[in-house]
Amino acid sequence: MISRISLQNRSYILQSLSYRSTHTVVLIRHGESIWNVENNRRFTGWCDIPLTSHGEADARDAGSLMGQRGLKFDIAFTSNLERAWRTCAIALSEAGQSHVETIQSWKLNERHYGALQGHYKNSQTLINSFGEEKLIDWRRSYHTTPPSLYNPSIYDKIDLESFRQNYEHMNHKYINIPALKQAVPPRSEYEKILGLNDDLSQGYLSKYNFDSLYPGAESLKDCEERAFGYWNEVIAPRVKAGYRVLIVAHANTIRALVKAVDHISDDMIAHLKIPNGVPLVYTFNEDLEPVMDLTDDIGLQAKYLVSARNHKKMLQYERCTLKKLRNLFEYLDKDNDGRITPQCLQTGLNQLQNYGDSEVDPDMSVSCEYNIEEILRCIPKADDKGGITLDAFLESEATLLPKLSTLRLLT
Image (cartoon, rainbow, N blue to C red):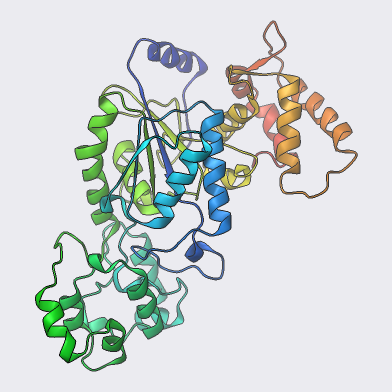
């Protein structure tokens, strides 16, 4: 059920914000990585996988968007994994804020998928060994933990090459090498991958130092406790002190933070999906409770920033129609003054409809003018300068939606 607060209450909320202290925090999931690509989707977790060129473009788009919207930051937080910290660096650079202090922490790393890491998500080996239902449970359940790297009973059930991918792409400081050596079958191909023969292992392992805080696998609950603990201990005090904060992390760490701050239930959080490279903006009050007049059936109270590049992606991930309308309005508001003019509509409509096309239809300008007239007829209210306000835009939902859907600007 979509929650909608009346326009009168919305105006009251906005007025109340003028005298109460509020804080802005922006969350971004890293851009597309090599293991996010279609036909190569693997359990990535703590494997350190780089961005694709598309992922770098995601990061540039996010940074450009934040710059255009006037978002400024005093500090940024990201994980120790390259796909996140590189997205953070690219986005800040594109926003003209490369000088912003950036703090990296393993506590913002992705959820640790244990022995599943390196496997394709549709791995036939895993399906044959554990069953498709169990795989889905490991991926989506809030409480269920996948098999640990240090569980000796799973090494006859997983794929050797996937184990190699897991081991070779993880920073070995996160691996309890002695425990892993004990877990894998002795004198096996798994042990060869570790590169520790009997002659070398004793001297190496006697000097090995491992932080016992690093997990061998995590449930989403474990990941939430880790990420939200870092929020409470390190990030939240900065936000309360007035720092403008950017967090660039991963699907599950962001999902965990969202679950905690929005008080989303254990069952509903499985339905929340986080898109790559799309800024998610929270406004918090002085008690660090989200301030939002629109929410969806899950309970997400943040809003996405929309660009011509990410617009179609936003439509897939945003579940609340009114929030889609507001996101579209803010995209069309090129002057950031809370109103859109016919010129704003024309510019925005052209950008959205032509994005990604190498050639522009010569009849598009005529079609665009007609569509603008149609849209303006759907919104009877205008200010004294002919501009359309957000309230007028949202009030026209019933007449706007069919037209915007026909233009594939809203679904």
